[in-house]
Image (tube, rainbow, N blue to C red; front, side, top):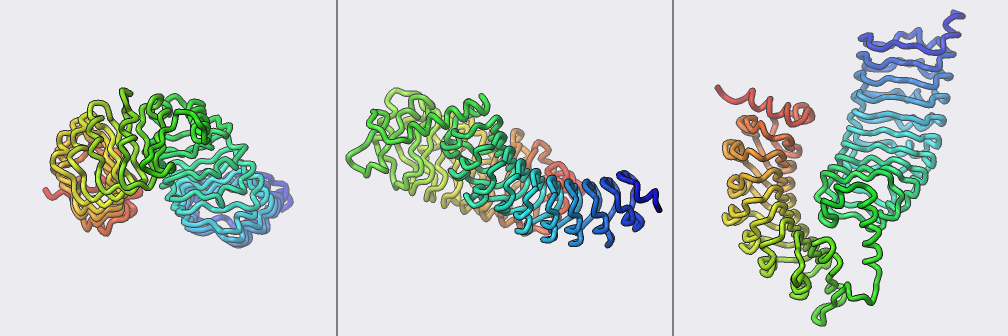
Length: 479
């Protein structure tokens, strides 16, 4: 037994162990215990006796719970629980006062115990690939340097989530459902790396430009306020652009702002800098019911490639939009009150990107067939009951986003003819069944079906991703 007491590290990796040998709990001097890549389903009582343990790896097992007695492991500095089947963490885990590194990637966590916020020594926290809907708050984690929350279902980032992260260097929020970034992001003065890719963010606070970021990832967002060529130039160009907009936003007597006598000053500002330098006609977030003529007049002879009239109260598309038909490729009319799409929009034959989400639309005109360059259309959060027929006849479409509607059916035969279609988002609709023939749409790289009332494919199949879903559907096609 004396030799047991002298053992400092124990490696039992890749051994197909189903239970942890109880004798391990007698190794009181053990500092490192490595049990990854086994078939463990539970941790036996008695682990709390390993009070000298500093490093423990239980990753890639089948654990569904962590015993509360883990809190007694007061010397533990690093704990790896990744790639298990944990649905929650015990509140007692906060008792590990020396823990610096906690890895819970690739589990089934839906919430994080509030007690976790009291772990004063925590520096690295990995929560990627879980089912988190909310960002935890970390009031006591003053030393937290890296927070990895990618591939969850987080919808909101608020000031309360950020205000305590004084030391944070890395914040990973990729592949979530964020719609905006608060101005309070500037509280993170130490932040060096910020990953916001593959969310639903359409604009960034200009104050973000004040941070000294080394890396900012934005790809995969419907970003309308920053032109793609700026994003493609990399982090420093984006930050430089945002800083320039802070200056633009400050009140000045310069001629870069045109005010009309017909409307309130707050409603009537036309950003001429945006027109001349960025080629964007931006009259967004004014809560106006119509776009003043002065906005279109301000274009003059300038080349305009993008229009952003989002976040207003528009009930119809401005007729004068047709004046820009020879040049505009991107149009954002999201967050308005449109109940029909007028034919003026169908005349913008250079249109490649159209954002109509968060309106009251239930149909699209057949004339949209003339949009022969359209690649992306966002119809999320409207009132569609079917996938509009005209979309099947726009062969250039690569991305159709129609989540959060009432779509009850899709035509898999017509979808198969859309050879360029790569992404189809049908989440949160009323699909009672998924036609097996949809499996023949082999060009699809992203097929999103969560949140529908169908029974098959089951959630376990959906979690495996698009290729697995399509294969499953193909196998069910009647022969």
